[in-house]
Image 1 (cartoon, rainbow, N blue to C red):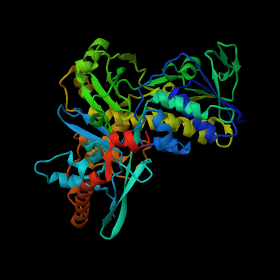
Image 2: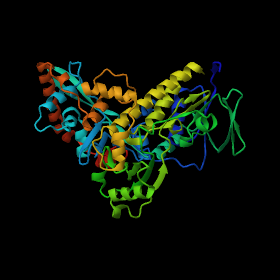
Image 3: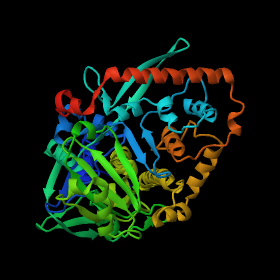
Image 4: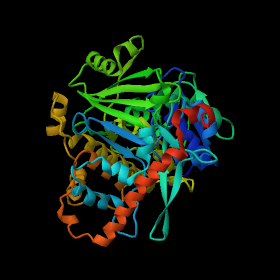
Length: 523
């Protein structure tokens, strides 16, 4: 296709994916006409209620303030994820959002924590999270930090070492109702100066002789034409998959779960249950999530249909939650779609964003990040008003790299398990296909904990360290034999200061529940 000046972008599909994309493109490309076509009766998946810290970039770009959007979306705060029973039953570990700091060294403090760990009697892998991170203390106490203006993406705390002052940054993300989030964006960005909404059903995708999309026909009799079409139709992938027949690369031999059952559970004791973190608990055929938003707990069971039927999964979920507590609650059991991605997500004049482009299970809350990253990268590609083969190639390379990195990171949560107590975990332990890229990463991690600089685009070294340590995938000791002892002593002092700072956090932090109830952004 020749270079062509963009005038109109047509987005098919609403929900959080469609409206996030529409809102971002309307702000990033103000000279273009943005049309969003959505059906009035297609339900959203409605379980993507947790995010990672990159959501702050989306919110900042759209000038969305917590005090405005959080009350409308049942928003609460998230400082990380707790993983129960993943390495073996009875153990847990954390994935906080902070970055491991560097103190006048080419090694982050986690490297020196490992040196300390090797000398511990008895050794305790969980000491990583208290020695090197602040957010885990907040999680354990169900508390959040607040400033005079209220939380806004991160908090910084001064720490002095050897006369040098540094700022410890404690970033956070959010829990919220993804359906309400899409509705909020619709109300805010729908209009003549932003996004034109058409409520109708697309009944036909008309292709030109060269295979590109020429127009869309709707049930209401409209024929809609655009320069670029964005597929936000979810698992249906009505444009990229159904119309353009783009091949799909499956990850199902690496990530086994393929179904989910979801429930909305009322609080019994919100002061204790409104936690500022996501909880995932490994079960016999998958794992159960717990995501506390302000008015309820979003929970459910992601499982592998080869090892549990929908009825068996529901029984396991209800038993985990407490039969009496949930006996009158409805559940929703659904296929979570093919696990993997379309080989290319920008084909001819069609770009798929969100579930229509591909899907990775939700254990690390990546779904809304993929939407934001896809929309932002598309806006970057269209910044001069043109697109061509080079634009598509660069975009496709970025999306593939991002999703493969996320696939590898998620696979590490499973493949490094010690468990083989159920048929599912036995299959995971012995038959997970390890992609070559993950095998190379693990080979390096056996020599030393991951250490920057890194060229990863989504999960950086600190995240990897947390999961590898949690899953007991620890490096050989040889690389730590020659560490400078004076430098190590400085790092050990830092860890002691971290312990003192965590103690003081109890005075400078507040109850998550009380903050949201009385003085916080959620009102």
